[in-house]
Length: 274
Image (cartoon, rainbow, N blue to C red; front, side):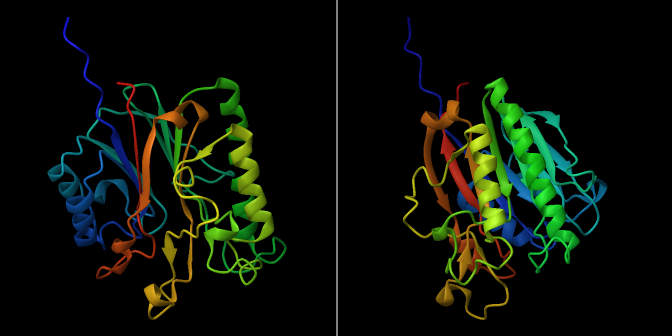
């Protein structure tokens, strides 16, 4: 009987592209360089009937699941593996295209989220955007707790717009009252992780003591030298998938290209169950 060959690890990338049509050359550069098997995008900013499919077709993404709206939000999943649409959640009472899910061939369910940024003022009485962000986070925490009861195989990716650890921001003390790193947000995100037992796939390889960012503001004239970043983009896996993780990295170089997104892609590899 012939020996069964080991399945090739799957590479999965998540990226807030900040308008897919405006950044097609950037997207092409990324796909040429990194060639992920599965690609999840956030903030595509295009309605479904105007989505630029050609580039993704050329790179072999035979499965393309999109959920968009004009000029705002939008999420998408592209894959060379045959995926099935697994759902589109509306968060905190709004149909604003912030979630899409797909089932992988091995039964793993992949969730792609774009959590609201929350505006500039971290006060729910003065800022409706911040209040909505916290409502979304609370709803996702309940959702995570429900997933735990099912004990399935899940992957969560996306721009969660929260940097939970002190080493996920350039200055913990200076950003304590800045939206994305306020205590109510970081504690809320960690509570959400605990509700399912999510494993932070990137911190599985990069120790929590080490600084790590995936976002650098457009406001900085020399973003790389200043390096005032935040880790807003995440990949989490359910405990059942922890042992399948092979590697994780932030493709920081993409932030330095012409007309870059302010986010860099996050890429993981993991074993496939077939």
